[in-house]
Length: 254
Image 1: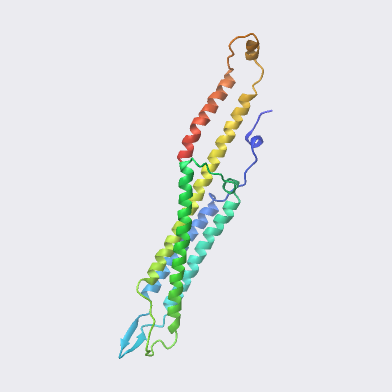
Image 2 (image 1 turned 120 degrees about the vertical axis):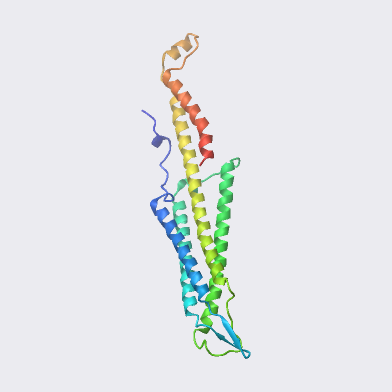
């Protein structure tokens, strides 16, 4: 009976990392990040300023527009991060190749992927946290003078110029860093799948070569004559050598 790939190894779990759903969710999260950035620019342009007159200050606006814009930007950025990371968590948990991953300590490609994944993960959550904190500061300040904003006051609290813009830039950076983490996970999965496919092919050829049918070679060996491999076994040897040579080449260019 012929040995097939299915006989040599169990079928791994399917992963949704490279699916159309994954690509759609990544594009959606990027669009949410762009929407957050635009809302932050609107909040920056409409932010309340302070005017002083006779040791008293008044606001130039009620702060409703920047408050609403900053609130929507806060929610959009949070939604983008939830979409990206929940999808990554579910997709990785459904992939045997990533869950049971064992890196070769001598593989430069594996080390590079590890450093990239760590960088993107830390950069994503750092920029996200700082951006959300800045938006919360802006929300708290703009919500403090919704009523009687024209009345003179002894002190007025205002947001510094560029706070909302910086929050928008950080939010956009967080979304792109998360996309980089997604691409790194895709590269890792593809790298492992190539390794597994090559191992299965090598094992299949090895099994075929390890148990050759009895042929005139055996008779020649019994007679003390030099054995010659049949054409099929010669083909198996060449195929095995081909896989061993190309395995390293394909893993380098993933």
